[in-house]
Image (tube, rainbow, N blue to C red; front, side):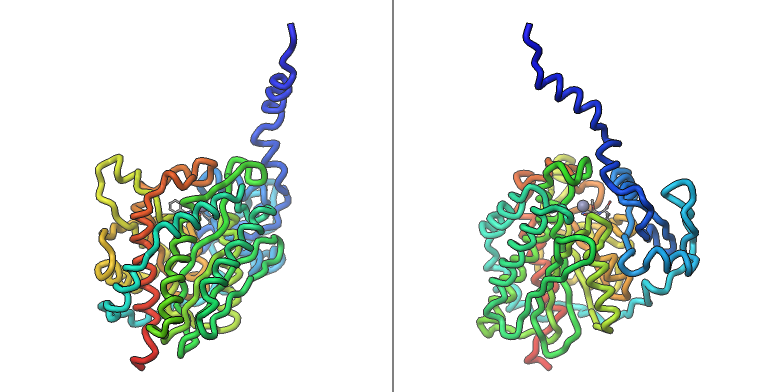
Length: 402
Ligand code: BES
Ligand code: ZN
C-alpha cells in the first residue's frame, strides 16, 4: 500500500508546530513597556504580548514613549524577575500625561443643510469597492510586507481624495521598529486647533500573526472605509467652495493598533510634545456587523463607549446622532485601551469611540480569517458615515461664521 506521504508529513508538522512553537517565533526578551490600566504598567516580551492578546488582556505598548530603562529608573516597574510578566505596580506616570480639558461642545446641530446635502451623496458601492480592495491584502499585520502594501494603497486613496482641497496635506508617519506607516490627512482651517477622526488600518490573525491571513473586514477595514467616505464628502464640499472649516480637520489611519496602539501612541505623543491642540477625537473601529443584534431581535444601534472616553464629548456625539442618523445609541464599555481613542486620551486629548453595537453583540469573528466583508451590513456602515460627517463638520465649524 502506498503511504500518503504528504498527509503523514502534514500530520507530523501539525503536531510539531504547536501554538507554542509559533508563539516562540516571537521574542521572549522582556523589552516592552506596557500600560495595562490607568495606573498599572508591566514589562513584557513580544511573545507575552501575543499571549495577552489571545487571552483578551488589553494594553498600550508605550515603549516608544517610556523606554525600559526609564521605566525601571522611575520605579514604574521593577527589574525583570523569573517570569516575563512581572511586577505590576500601581503608580501614576506623568509622562502620559495631563488632565483632559473640557471644551464647550455644541448642544445642538448648526449645519443641518450642508450636512444633510452631503449625506445624500454617500456612495455605498464605492465604500464596498474600497473594502473589497482593502481586505484583498493577505494580511495588514503591521510587521508584514502586505501590511506595507495596504498602507501604500490607502495613502494613494487618501491623497486622491484631498488633492483638490486647498492647503491639504497627506503625511506618512514613519514609526521606529516596524515598516507600516500611519497616515495623517490634514485640511487646514482658520484655526490650527484640530478635530480628528481616526481608524486603524492594520489587521491581525491572533492564531499566527505572521503566517495566517487577516482580512480584517470589520476590524478595522470597516472604520477605514467609513472615514474614507466621510473624507470624500467633506473634501468634495470644500473643493466645491460649499464649505470651509474653522478648525483644522484631520483624518488619521493608524498603523499597529493590534500591537498595542503603537501607531496612535506615536502620533498623539508627538502632538503632545509639539503642544498641538486637539479639541476632539472620534475613533471608528468596527462599524459594520449587525448579525449579533439581528439574531437576538435587538434593534440595530450604535454602541457609545463610555469608559476611558470624555463624557462631555460623548454627549455631543449623541447630539450628532439625533440630528443625522436613523438608529439610536446604546451605552457600552470596552475596557481599558481597547482602541486608538485611548492614545488620544492618555495624551490629554478629548476622545470618544462609537462602535457598531453594544460590546456584547459585536462581531466575534475578528482577528481570524473569518472576518470577511460578506458578513457586514453596509446600511449600518452608512450610519457610521453619517455620524462621521456630522461630527467633523459640527465640531470643526465653518470659517465664514467667525
Ligand atoms: N477593534 C478591536 C477592539 C474591540 C473589539 C472593541 C471588540 C469592541 C469589541 C481592536 O482592534 C482590538 O483588538 N483591541 C484589543 C486591544 C489592543 C490595545 C491590542 C482588544 O480589545 O483586545
Ligand atoms: Zn482588533
